[in-house]
Length: 60
Image (tube, rainbow, N blue to C red; front, side, top):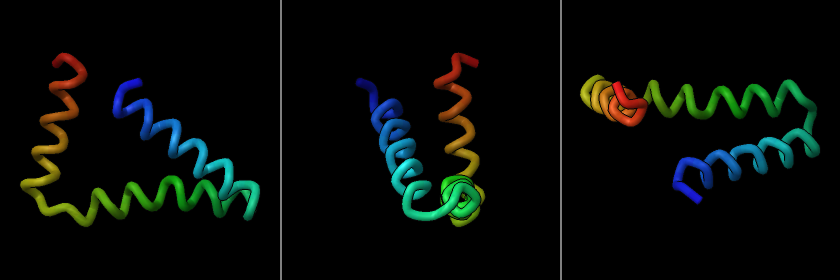
């Protein structure tokens, strides 16, 4: 299994556990909010590098 697939499976598992322990909207807010805050915490050069790597992996 690839690294990205492992991360996706872990995120889905954490989301399901969070959904069971709380309600859907709190789980959705955490699953969307945490990656968004982490992205915004990067400085501009790190964001540029992340976008460049993401495009390269897509074959562009």
